[in-house]
Image (cartoon, rainbow, N blue to C red; front, side, top):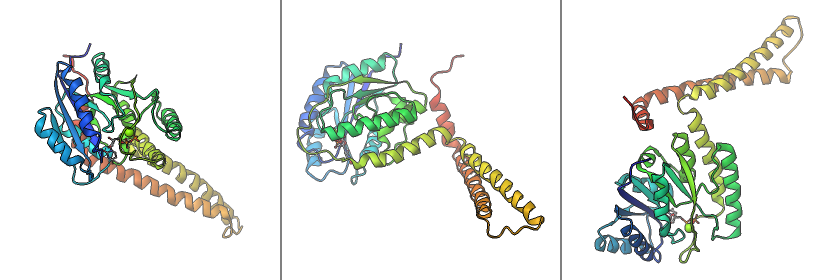
Length: 316
Ligand code: UDP
Ligand code: MG
């Protein structure tokens, strides 16, 4: 049984949500004050330009639990979350979208799930209140990601999640990678679970994302799967493929050399081109592997910290 989470931080990324932030903060405070734990709410203002910032400043001034992290411009949700995680002091960290679609009343259940032993609990918008096109695209996204990463969640990209603080400290989100947080956490060996949560219509403003997100998302998935598997041994990937190429290239070129020595002309043969190309590309891949290994040696210190962050406990 895991220890009780005494201090809960709620991180809310917001970009131009001026109608939503006040009602959301009221809902949040009502729920948090009923928890009987120490709590804080961190709104991360991701470069809003619609007056959200002024409303947040008011809220921070009047409510002791509320703080605002203002980003210099709109950096995107991953950057907003990272900025919030940096400031969050809780043992448990809850992220919730700032558009009132997620229901703060679900927070106690998410925390219960953490205390029951999960390291990350991801919300599952089982009855999702969005356009059918978005729901369909999301089904495909979750299916592909699930199949490629081996993570069996219904709704990876739900903005409503609860984490043990170790999990957020181990995350290094860049670009749009917030979509894959459960994959990243599972890569690090954290226990990831899922909980159906109430989902509501967006009452104000509009979604910041269209369908193009799924295209970019696929590239992010490749990056994450590659990094998860080979970050600490890039040579096994690049060197492996490189050696295979070189080997096949050498066999081809040896065969052609024998032909040439027996007097046959080989200058016009497409096979020659293939053999040479395989060797050249193979050497390049091999070199990329070596350079990657050196880059990763260069980062030994952070890796030492990483090694520490992977340890759950030490028994003496
Ligand atoms: N958001 C943000 N920065 C951005 C885009 C969105 O902080 O560049 C916030 C947004 O204000 C909202 C949350 O991320 O609180 C989820 O965004 P949205 O509701 O537009 O996404 P959807 O629900 O359509 O997936
Ligand atoms: Mg939304």
